Amino acid sequence: MASIGRRRRGIDFWPGFVDALAALLMVMIFVILIFTIGQFVLTDAVSGRDRALAQLNAELSQLAEQLSLETNARKRADVQLGELSASLASSESARQALDVRLQSTEAARAETEAARAAAEAEGLRLVADIAALQRLKTELEAEAARLASQLDSTGTALKEKTELSERSIAQVELLNRQLAALRTQLEQLNEALGAAETAARSKDLEIEELGKKLNVALASRVQKLARYRSEFFGRLREVLDKRDDVQIVGDRFVFSSEVLFDSASDNVSEAGKHQLAKLASTLKGIAREIPADLPWVLQVDGHTDRRPISTERFPSNWELSTARALSIVKFLRAQGIEPQRLAATGYGEFHPLDERNTDAAYAKNRRIELKLTNR
Image 1: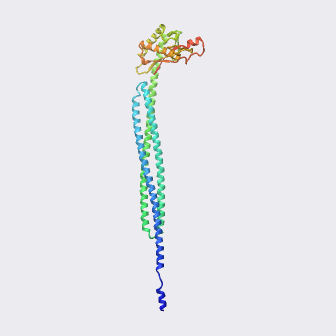
Image 2 (image 1 turned 90 degrees about the vertical axis):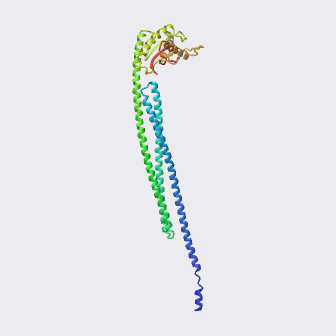
Image 3 (image 1 turned 120 degrees about the vertical axis):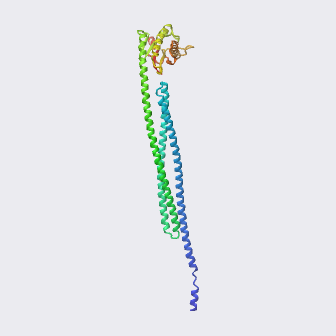
């Protein structure tokens, strides 16, 4: 019995206790490692979401700036349209200025359309970013669910894992609120774009209406000029009736150069001065009846034949034809015709009436043409 008692006292439980404690410690280390990895993954996902939200905020700021630029461009277009409306009643020179302003307005409208298209593209990109954020939210929810399932398998770390899940859910809710705010901003942006499109269509209608008014005004001026041109032709026909040296070709009177000038000269002959004096008298009578704001001009065109000329004064037919047209303009100016109503052009031998190389063709091509037209 004494030997049995000694054997029972010799049993040592310490190694088994150490093994059990070591196993428990390994399990705890494994659980802590799993928790650390899960926290790292969740932190990285949340950090990526924050970067995406910061980028979206920067893009929204750029879009707001573009909308401000678009508003300024619209205001400039409104000012230009007001100036165009005020200048419709001006003369032909004012019409040219109006054309320039209309072109400027069209360019501004094109820039506005480009900005609107860029804004629409930006809006589409925002929609894509929102979809990406929604996918990120889904991934975070899946990650939170996965972590929750892992937390269920470890009883010792249940409380800490539950707190982590609650933080993840709170972050997901915050993300949902931010997404809702982004959707609200996107709706406001769409409304602003719709208003911009409506304003652009309104400006297009105003420009079209201005163009119609301008065309009506121009048609009225053309009709007035045509009436006075007809009267000018009628009176000049009475003065030059039954003269073989003057022809009527279309809407212009054609004088033979031999009637007005000596050969190779730009000095008006005495017979030519007599004819031009009659013309000046007729033109002054008509000019008194034409409204001052009607931009009419008597165009004097000089032509020569194709035979070359080379003198110190006239190196070519171009100089000769131009000098003759200028001589007639100066003579009419001396007769009392206002200088702003006169124009001189030299065409040389490059616009013949007869292409043949005969004396009759040369005489026909040497001519001075008079035409009442608009500036």
